[in-house]
Length: 331
Ligand code: PBG
Image (cartoon, rainbow, N blue to C red; front, side, top):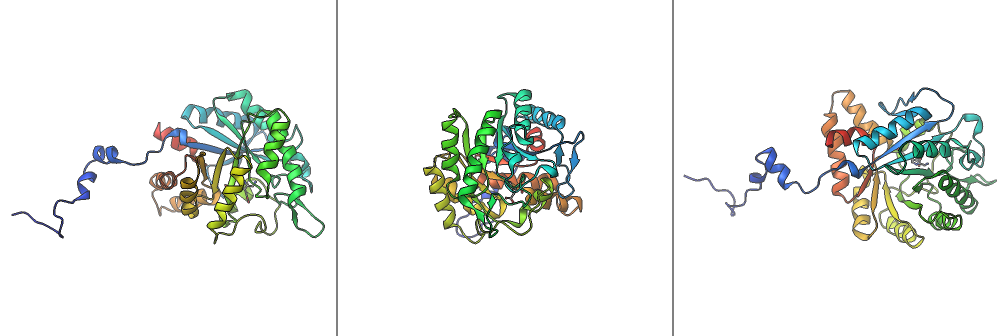
């Protein structure tokens, strides 16, 4: 005698979940090493990598170990590397001049990675002042203590040029100043860098999950970035940021952080015809590592699940500190 259930006895979705081969065949989304981009920190003046305590497994690289990390990323099939420079403390100042010094650590790192792996990896650079300013803000601060949008744009234009001169393929403006993409596009075009792309941090939220990054770049910030980064409560506002970035010439757009903003990512991905990136940030990394270290979750499964969720929500590219490790496992 056969058992039936409900009114549709033939409809049994579980048939397609019976074996690993069956599940693999019907999988709708597959992570691939080429989806992944590795964010990497390089610190000026160190000969050994410096561990970041809030991001176990991630380091501030020396110039040497950064080159090695780039080679390993290529070997694993990772698509790109996003570089962050950590200058010597004494080189920080109000205008973040180390960020526009052709021999500043970020420019040096770009040249190093370019010399090591050439075009085998898409070399990207964080285009922002916070790593280089003594106050830790992403821009120039006026006499009232406010971040001055247009004075900052001038600094960004200069940064774009020096990063492009160093050989970067893609610049990633992450400071959330109004008009930054347009100014950077102009600066690149006027200095013969028409081929350098702009990956716009389109929807970047003022998030608590950046916490561990502050240690990673030795940030001097007191306070927060709420006058320039978006309020986590807002979704429609991201569509406005998106329209402006595209109008200003963004080649690719990004949503950041990833996991708490999958709805934003899905909406952006649906709305555009340019590649969409998502940044799985430091705090997202730290959460999984901390829970796994306590034996509270299965680390490998949790990592893959977060990345698959980000891809399912619509990301073509995912920046993740696990990029090389995951690419190796997938490959
Ligand atoms: C700004 C920048 C930040 C991150 C990337 N670019 C920090 C911030 O906006 O406060 C965060 C990345 C992460 O948390 O992994 N230069």
